[in-house]
Image (cartoon, rainbow, N blue to C red; front, side, top):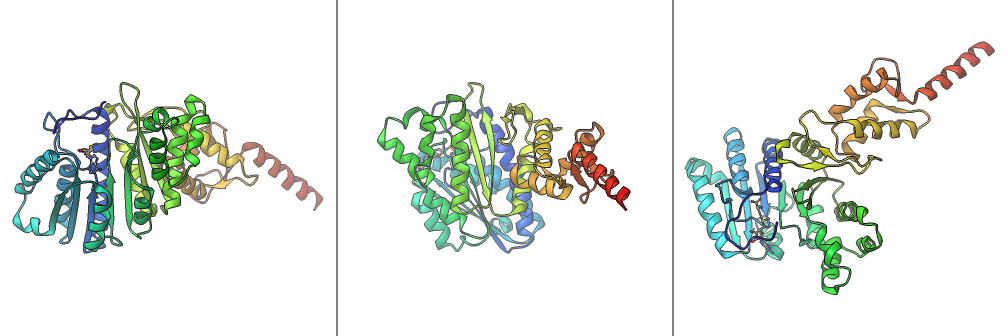
Length: 376
Ligand SMILES: C[S@@+](CC[C@H](N)C(=O)[O-])C[C@H]1O[C@@H](n2cnc3c(N)ncnc32)[C@H](O)[C@@H]1O
């Protein structure tokens, strides 16, 4: 879809999926952090007007409603910091948040503060977060531009180096693959976003590899900036346009909750994604009962890459940190793989301590044990 010029615009399926994901994640994030901290912060660099053409709420309003619900349960404080450069959209956003606030008590307003600023998010967003003491305390930053890339790497670095900060960035790879090869300004824009020039190797890649390559480059940039974990959520609209939401965190819990949110996204939005580790790169519909065939292949790959196999706990950790799947999916899958003799388990029953091996490794181990027994 072209960049909208009007104050509000129709919500497309991408956006519906993104909102579903955001709502699910914040509904987990806010209570966990409010149960442990007195004050937490949510910031957006590209807030939009807070509403879509048919009355659907924008991301700041969705976040506000989730936080209002969480603050009913926890007598703590939450600050929202919102930036938007279009004056008309700022005005609309103020109206929309005033309506959201009117649905709650004055007592809640004092604990859920909203600071809306008009202007370019950079560098005001970071300055304001620093000035209000929000950096270094629990903070979630949504940088939801039209896909840019628009976020300076240096900004990601500052955020990543704070202990409890998470980011979600919208990244559209098509701009760079279409315009940057022959245009110095656009290439420099890419360099500023990736914090280096390695991404430019994309120009030598076959067409089918270009987007996944840029996505992985962007995830690496977030790692280099300081986030220990990253996840991506791929959205492909009806026109085949790819948009990535890239999430960075340094907390295992954040990673786990984001995965839960991703797997829970309503599939009627037509969102698709694929796991970069799946050798078949299968594109999947997001389903409530997800297709775990790619995870089977990934786990099998892990098991066979070690002569002594892997424990279920190791496979769960690997699944959490290195794939788009969830640790909770592993045990059921290993049982199925054992029953169909794709893997062997030792002992046969499956729990976190069970060792999972390639069936051939188990039979050669058993032969060795039998031979040793015979020698004795
Ligand atoms: C994709 S929309 C945001 C949608 C919103 N997050 C939502 O989900 O409802 C991007 C918004 O960023 C604003 N914008 C673009 N460049 C900006 C900048 N440099 N700083 C702040 N806002 C910007 C645009 O005016 C637009 O409203």
